[in-house]
Length: 188
Image 1 (tube, rainbow, N blue to C red):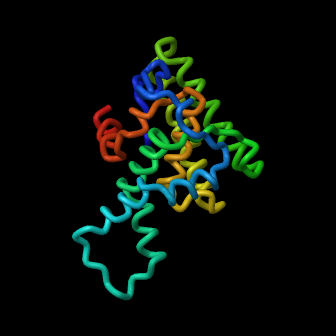
Image 2 (cartoon, helix red, strand yellow; image 1 turned 180 degrees about the vertical axis):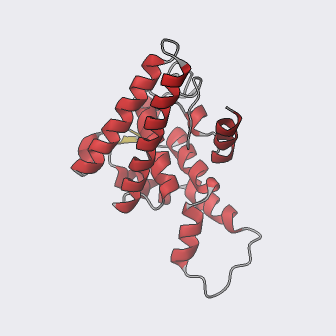
């Protein structure tokens, strides 16, 4: 589960010292992925991922790519690319209707969660966060299944970038590793 805590969904937390107006922006997720794959962020992370690893000659390029795209390093490079080089701006019209609807549900659940924090019971907030997390999972899976992103991890990251583009999340929160998120959930 990708539990967000109150600090993580507070849009008032500064997103970056650099304005997004200084960076190119796209709403096309395919173009965004293509631009990432052509970036220095991708090249450096891809190279770093395989440093010190012994890879059998039988391993295909596709298998190497799959391993990379499922790594925390790849996700971090993707988020960093979005923060520092090119912004992603969510628009549901760039997705097939079923994916756009799932995405919009995720966004609405995130908005509701932000609105009720500090005003509702802890149990209600936890329940809404579980619904939001389930929608996040559905968006990530739908994006991967449609071939829009190369992995579930990238689907989750693109969903977070959509929230950031709508001022419902921030890069500091999106940069939190999956391991740290899991520790927070288990400690709660």
